[in-house]
Image 1 (cartoon, each protein chain N blue to C red):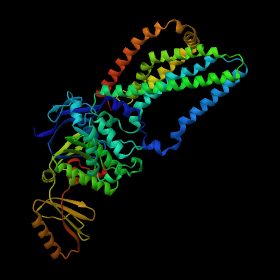
Image 2 (image 1 turned 90 degrees about the horizontal axis):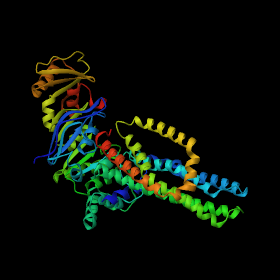
Image 3 (image 1 turned 135 degrees about the vertical axis):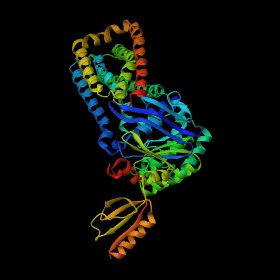
Image 4 (image 1 turned 60 degrees about the horizontal axis):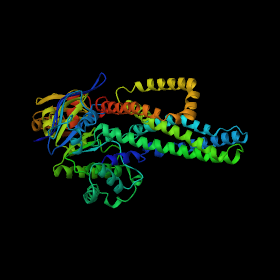
Length: 244
Length: 307
């Protein structure tokens, strides 16, 4: 029965509002096309000038934490959008089970998103290989390793980011919904500080040194998953006691 | 066990606003219980408490003798909840929707197939079962939503304003279905702000206002307790409040007068005699049958339709 619940979360359930609004249905595809066109232009320009470092393609993965927050928040938000919060919570499962089902569905979607980016990155690499005379096939090893490193980091911190996104979604359903805007302000401030101060350090670490210290991921893995678990328990308590 | 549902001093607040205040309710097993009240009266909060969606701040809720806090999953397995909004996959057929939600409720295989056919027949949609839900009217979707709630044969069916925005045909079919389920012994809790629906379907009624149950009981009991029979007289020549010896109260209504009385026939007789003696041109002289609207008006001072 639990897997039926996960399956339920993975099914697309659009609201009447969305169905009546055709531009909303297609907007994500428009964003994707715009993104691909921009990426294509950049790769072409840099490759023709012989200035392309293919590992820079993975810079796009900086956006992944935002995508994960968006995916996980959306999986809660859709209950609100479809007016089904009450129905969802009347399902004969413990609150924590309901949240775990959504968490796993969000994890699955996040892995798919990463894999799609990974494949698109590979396509970008092979395209650059065709037009950049300096680029060699054996560069693919370093390229793949950098992409995989980021993947490994996502496995470590992904669950925490997803739980955080879900937490924001659930907070909006409770008496503490006024804290949501405060969270976003804090989130953007922290993110801006990190990027402005440490972006190069982080990317240098990912690209050159991370592979040499895979143990780092194992050290980070445990606290991340423990915090994720605590957040999920906390979410279920919020849903039990503070739902509006 | 005679009570399906019991509320003991249940209180629920949202911040400083008290949504439900020290509520005591008991719903008999097998009854069709109507929760009637204007929007914002606290009906939705009560429905959420009954279906285990929210927990009370204080007090105790028991369903089938089980404490809600300790047995929430067990209780929810025995409840069929029909929310106000439609919760179906538009791109799937009704049968596929029922199969999916049936599996979520733990019904499988042949038993599930049989139940799907059964609920489709009950909701009058067996000939449309293979069609995608998006091709259905609002009323048909609502009926499938009810069918979903019936799949696991619940002991308690909770319907939250199930007739809002649907066509008269679907409304009648839903009424028929509720009557059939009630006759079969299912306990039903029906929330609405339409008093006609409660009068037509429910054998027990709770009138809710400002988070309190202001009256509860069987329809006749409520009418007898909170209203008095009355006579309405309309004549252009009666400009001042008429003096009727048998009247307990006289109220101006529209172009005429409502005369509340314990003695209907003597009052009519008196009015007829007066009209004959004074040669009044009487446009209307009729007995008014009290309704829940009158009960609400009596208890709150405002009309249910005006709130």
